Amino acid sequence: MDTYTEKRREPRRPGRGAVRITWENPKPYEVDGRLRDYSPSGFRMRHASRDLTAGQLVEFVHFSGKGRARVVWNRITGEEVETGFLVVAEG
Image 1 (tube, one colour):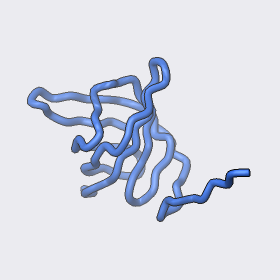
Image 2 (cartoon, helix red, strand yellow):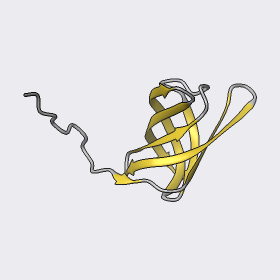
Image 3 (cartoon, helix red, strand yellow):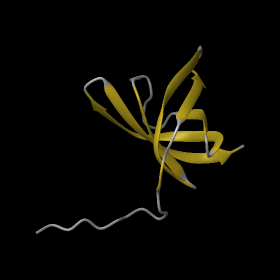
Image 4 (spheres, one colour):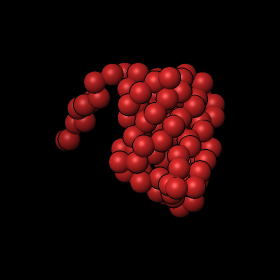
C-alpha cells in the first residue's frame, strides 16, 4: 500500500473569498477566482482563465494579503482551472 508523505514546509489553511490576479503582457489582464487554500508562502485558486503560465509573475489580492506571486502550476479540468502560486513579495 502506498502512503502519501506531506512535503509542504508550511501548513495550509482553507481559503475563502475572491482572488484577483493582474499582469501586463504588454496589455493589462485580470483574472478573478476563488481562493482554495493559502500559507505564508503561497496560495491556490480556482478560476476559468487559461492565460496563466508557469513561471509568470502576477500581482494578487485576496482576503489574507496582496503582493506579487509566481505561477508554479496549472491543473485544467474541463472549464475550470486551478493554479498554485508562490508569493515572492507581499505589499
